Amino acid sequence: TATFGQKEIVMMGTGTMTCKKYMEWTQSKSGVEKEIITPMVEEWIKGYLTGRNRQLDTLGYKMINIDNVAELGSMLTFACANAVKKDAGTMPIFVLVDKIYEDSFDNKVLKK
Image (cartoon, rainbow, N blue to C red; front, side):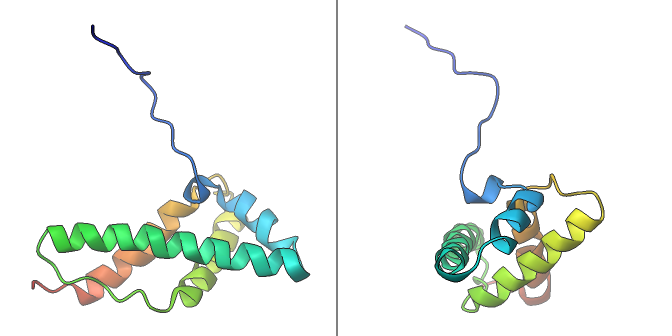
């Protein structure tokens, strides 16, 4: 028996959140809520970039140091704020994280 899946690709999770939603979500919170949200997004960034690093490793490149995830979170907030100002608030945050990662990759790429 053959079964055909749906023709659409469905993506879920933190990375699919739009910049506009991310900014609303992070900027409108304070206190305990912000203390929960910020580390949650930073943990998502770590996991996502670990996967990207695994791709580099598989392709024979040295992985990029992603130790300072809090800095990446700040860069994401800055980039999303700019995207919202430029009417590009519907951009998913994974696109910006990819851009930040690829900029680091371009500067540090080395074969093993």
